[in-house]
Amino acid sequence: MEGMVYRTKKKKFIFWQSFFFIFIVLMAAYVLLQSPIFTISKISVRGNNSLTAGELIKVSGIVTGMNIFKADLQTAVEKVRVLPVVKDVSITRKLPDNVIIEVEERVSVALVVADGRFLELDTEGYYLREGSAAASGLPVITGMPVQVAGPGQPVRGEGLKTALRVVQELPAGLRKELSEVHIGKDGMVTLYTLDGIQCRLGLPEDVAVKGSYFLQVQQELQDGHKSIEYVDFSYVGSPVVKYKD
Image 1: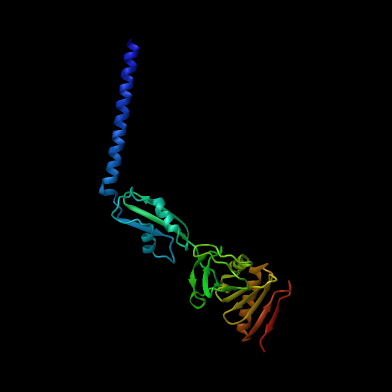
Image 2: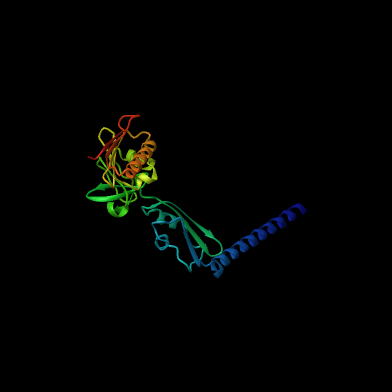
């Protein structure tokens, strides 16, 4: 009998202990959701370059004045990730009143032409936005038809990945001077500079080395006040320089 009474008292104690714990949790939740201390007063944006902080905040749907715990961060992430320029995004709370939006943007490296429009692509071939050859300062990739699904989607085209890789592997100083990267049906790569010089890279191999040599030839000839018609790397180990008459 005493054992039964003891067990009954113990059950009652556990019940009231559990009830008290749940009550404390509910009270804490109420305080967190209602306290002005946890009202969002600042939204910080990091990692953006082409997108403004205002654009990202607006798309996220998070606003100042709302309770920081009521902000649906996962939904906000999904909204921001839809933007074509956004490669990745994370949104976190910094208690008591700050939300941080951190993005990784895709960077335009080249253009392709589709339906009479210039489209900016990143290193992976994602269509970021419409562009302009004159305004963007990016080289135009030519030599193959491309298939475009829409902004934020990868552009398809035979030889396009090769062309994008070539652009990335070229020295930065040469990339700034390019107007066109042409991929022939035979897989041969030809570069054209803004000054109209043709650089026949040949097969897309040892691109960085060929690009550095081309820059060196350009500099030497500029110092000697000579003009180049083309530089040909088609024959491995013996590049040919053709001067303008």
